[in-house]
Image (tube, rainbow, N blue to C red; front, side, top):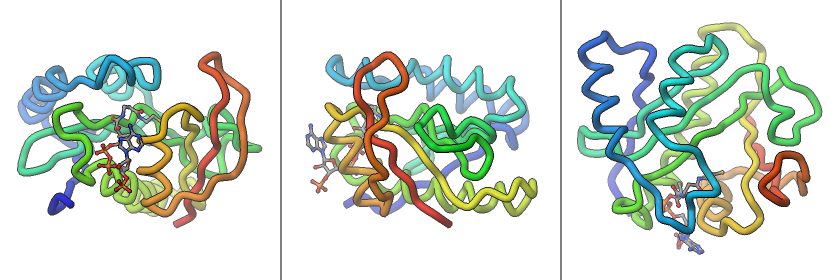
Length: 171
Ligand SMILES: CC(C)(COP(=O)(O)OP(=O)(O)OC[C@H]1O[C@@H](n2cnc3c(N)ncnc32)[C@H](O)[C@@H]1OP(=O)(O)O)[C@@H](O)C(=O)NCCC(=O)NCCS
């Protein structure tokens, strides 16, 4: 198990620090088999920086980015939740293929809940937790979320990449 991860909120960085992080994020990659489960990291983060509802984070370990994730308000139905606004949507989550299998994904999925609770406290959106959808054929993703305390809330057939599981963790 790796020591720790730090979720760095990219919207809070000044331009120079953000440019350095974006350079690190541009070098992240997943395995060929995982490419259908998640978007391209730099592209997802750049979209996140432009949209008010999205909060992109670098997942840092030992001072450099090993992954990314985004928390989004008002979009939970994209993960099969009954409404958009009562919980945060976790999306665009990946750990670089060279850093996988060390426990970092589990730690980051756990830290995402803490970060989401802080956003709710700061912004007053009233959310009660975090939801995501993970492909049924993605055992690493399902294991990381389960180990980080997310509950399986059933199958979700939305989207165009096959059956998903809706997973939720409250604050
Ligand atoms: C999902 C992901 C973030 C997990 O990151 P990670 O750092 O490798 O996660 P961890 O090291 O914490 O491992 C989590 C669990 O998955 C298990 N796991 C890893 N690869 C696996 C595989 N191919 N099959 C089954 N289990 C697997 C690990 O063994 C571990 O469980 P264990 O500790 O009980 O053995 C990473 O695999 C990834 O980036 N995948 C591509 C993008 C993606 O699928 N994102 C999620 C979209 S919802």
